Length: 267
Image 1 (tube, rainbow, N blue to C red):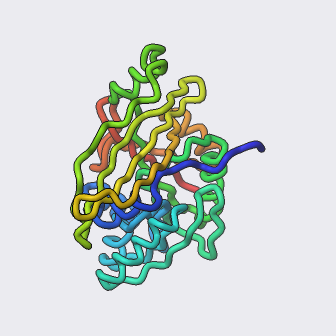
Image 2 (spheres, rainbow, N blue to C red):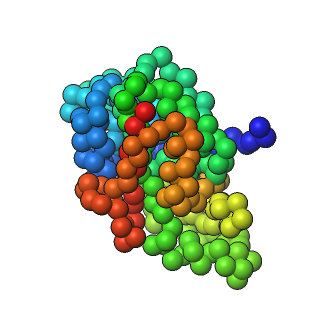
Image 3 (cartoon, rainbow, N blue to C red):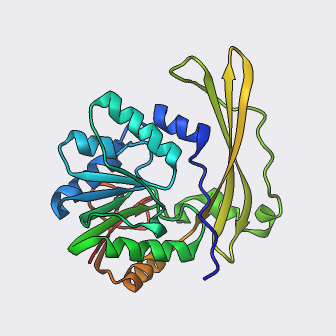
């Protein structure tokens, strides 16, 4: 199979931004914690990143491991965990390379599916999740369909695609870091391929100190666009059954008005 490695931008200064500012688990944390408590432990937080959801799970006394493809994000997670007095078991692996020593009753993945822009790897990743679950275990993840995102749809049209890549904005809002330096992030879309159903974006990260630019990084991320029925087919191909879809993070029936869909699939 001829595939590329997934492209994500959660490295370097972007990972630092997540580590310092993405600390609120919001409604996603409560949703997936309830799924873990209901479906059983041990559990795996796949794509745990800087620990936005994983650390609240551990603080609640749950038995949850963390896994992420970005070592920089995991470093941020370890640093936060040390400050907050928890000791997560962390693994640096991509979903399609998952090879962990434990088997889980629940695997959760928040904001992960579609990142990387390589459908064959996502299919393999679903199979690896199936293999890492105990019999009867649950794989739960969220996905943001594009039907309620007008810029995403308009970018598929010829006039939108032909205007790419977007120009960089001259500057963005700066965030004050703990060491007194400032971090500025600016994103742009560089390509949309409706045939492959992928979008490619870039993130420019600039680090400022005392008003002087001291570092600049540019990271690229591809994103796969799925329909909900395609995701169901991929889950079924991986062996999953009893597939449910919920609208948002409040255990509601899914409707076209929901901007996020939560999938639950059982082994």
